[in-house]
Picture 1 (cartoon, rainbow, N blue to C red):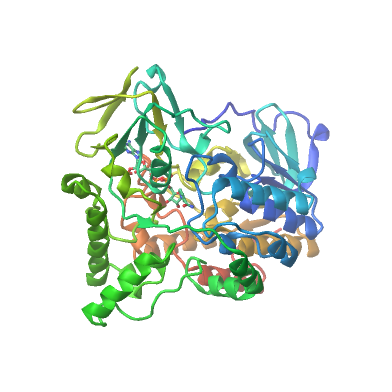
Picture 2: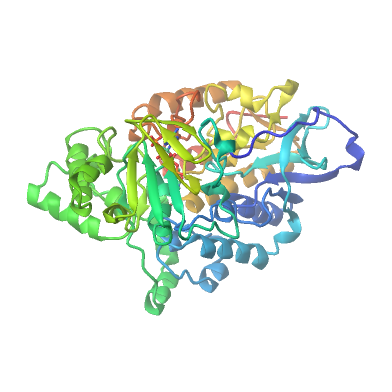
Amino acid sequence: MVDSLQQTPAAGAGHAEDVERFDAIIIGAGVTGLYSLYRMRELGFSVRAFEHGSGVGGTWFWNRYPGCRFDSESYTYGYSFSEELLQEWDWKEHYSGQPENERYLNYVADKFDLRRHIQLNSHVVSCVFDEDESCWEIHLEDGQRARGQYLITSVGILSAGFIPDFEGIDSFKGKWCHTVRWPKEGMDLAGKRVGVIGTGATGVQLIPEIVKEVAHLTVFQRTANFCAPLRNSPIDDDEQREIKASYPEIFKKCMKTAGSFVHEFDPRSAMEVSPEERLEQYERLWDNPGFGKWLSNFHDIMVPGEANEDYAEFFRNKIRERVNDPVIAEMLVPKDHMFGSKRLPCESGYYEVYNRDNVLLVDVREAPIERITPKGVKTRDAEYELDVIIFATGFDAVTGSLNLLDIHGEGGHTLKDKYAGGPRAYMGIASAGFPNLFTINAASVGNFVRSAEPLVDWVSEAMCYVRDNNFTRITATLEAENAWVDHVNKDGAKILRTQANSWFVGANIPGKARVLLTNPDTAPAMRAKRAEVAANGYEGFLLQ
Ligand code: NAP
């Protein structure tokens, strides 16, 4: 992992008297952390957010690699809680880039005066539940401690970067980095021989940008993906006015869809319409920007079968049309997983990169990487000499960022041990034996802000319920947790997301248990479930 576990202070070490106390400690000042801070403070809780980075923004602070941008429409990604914010902020592009997204989150932090509750450069290395005082104590790398009745982990699902355990990385004489730790000052790639390992959503955003400046690019691909043109463009003044006037409708639409995106599936079956009508829809969606190609299509595209395969072949042919050399085109055509079984990477000129003379595509499934050498990358078949290696090799998703926090619950048991066979959390947010801990990072998926806002609202209201009823602890029961894990495993097996080897099921990390790491339900179903739990007096939770 990019951040290895640091040495952990002994549980319960030191005296509690000299430690600052809060109602809630939030770890992370990214999209969910900032909103948690705002919301909990508004409800009268004393709150402090501890952020590892030197700035706010989370994902949009760390992922500074060239090409990094939204794949959901900018105006669907912003916070909805403040009409003033919605009217003040101009999204400049339909799919806004990292620098602008980071500016937005800084703007939010300033506008709502959140900075005074945020401690930056604060690396949390362990979190220990104090059973006598019913509170959490967190330990920072520099020895600082803080206590809070609640511990809110807003550390993101994709933040613990993963670098495969290649031998010899330290022997490499050139420069290397993982995309999640792209240096603020940038990487000097001009005129260099650069290698990129990984062709997921990150790799396909990065590659078309850096190819413009490198002398030579070698791309090491293990699995070819279905990637779709993003078709980003600026937002002009007229559209800006239109967007600002229609936020309520935009958000209403997002709240109805499975992943909280603005795109809605076509209720028709692909196989029930004529071949001409089917193709007309495929082509129209293809020409449109964003995720419509995936999420506005015939509904049965998203289940294994004839429709899925028909659309997959349409996609494959689009790739073949864009790549001049038929041999290279076939290397880029995905053949080992179903369309939609992974999140669809959106790209801007990705396939055309392979028409350039200074780009080499290396199939590392056929000839795997054996080691990193002082000169570059050695596969089974050859050694590739490089000045820079970029690891676009993804993340230890969901549980990776929680494991780095070294969380100890009742009886000193660790969350890491509890999650060894996969996450065990009621509704994805609360685990038996870990009172007053809400793992909100683990339950926000899809269009991130749209799913995070209602989740944070729910957790904040649960905290009010505990306060108003003079309880001190809220803990998921083992029965509720077990039933939820059974549901995730049983219903998760039916969805497309569990069918491919991807981070969704931990298949990208050697040795990680293969289970669905997120909830299998649609966003409206999750919101309904949480509402029902609250309406029934926090059913499935033990209140003490
Ligand atoms: P990823 O999808 O996990 O891709 C990692 C890449 O590294 C894959 O191509 C993988 O190959 C390759 N890899 C890993 N280990 C390797 C090894 N030992 N040898 C060779 N290749 C290896 O990670 P990601 O691209 O960072 O994307 C992760 C998620 O982040 C996305 O699914 C998306 O949810 C999010 N994301 C979103 C955006 C956006 O547009 N908003 C942008 C970037 C990322 P295999 O496929 O064979 O495992």
